[in-house]
Image 1 (cartoon, rainbow, N blue to C red):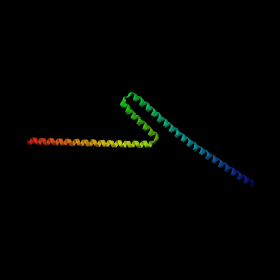
Image 2: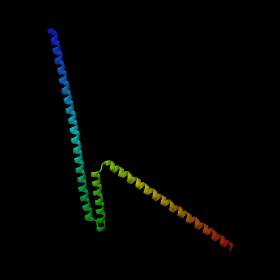
Image 3: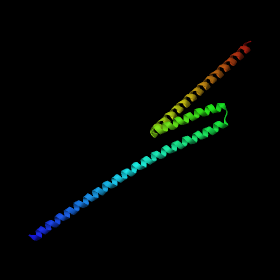
Image 4: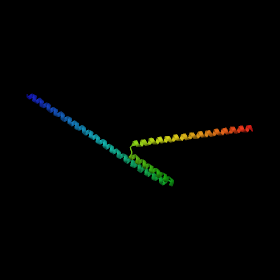
Amino acid sequence: MMMMMMMILMMMMMMMMMMMMMMMMMIIMMMMTMMLMMMMMMMMTMMMMMMMMLMMMMMMMMMMMMMMIMMLMLMMMMLMLLMLMMLMMMMMMMMMMMMMMMMMMMMMMMMMLMMMMMMMMLLLLLLLLLLLLLMMMMMMMMIVVMMEKKREA
C-alpha cells in the first residue's frame, strides 16, 4: 500500500513538473512573440522617421539648389524656376501623403496619356502626309492636263 501511495505521489509530482514546464514554455513563447512584435513596430516607426527625414532633407536641398540657380538666372528663368519649385514641393507633399501605390498608378496613367498623345501626333502626321500626297497628285494631274491642252493647241 505504501508503495502504491508513493507511486501515486511520484506520478503527481511528475505531472506537476510537466505542467510547470509547459507553462514556462508557453510564457517564454509569448514573451518572444511580444518582443518580436515590438521590434517590428520599432523598426517600422524608425523607417518612417527616416523616410520623413530624407524627404525633408531632399526638400531643403532642392530649395537651396533652386535659390542658387535663381541667383544666376534672369527674370524669365526665375519665374520658370519658381513654377518648377512649386511643382517639386507639390510632388514631395504628394509623396508624403500618398502611398507608393498611388504614385505608381499616377505614373502609369501619365505613361498612358503620353502614349495616347504620341499616337495622336503620329496620326496627325500621317494625315498630313496623306494630304501632301493628294496635293502632289493633283499637281501632277494639272500638269498633265496642261500638257494635253498645249498639244491640242
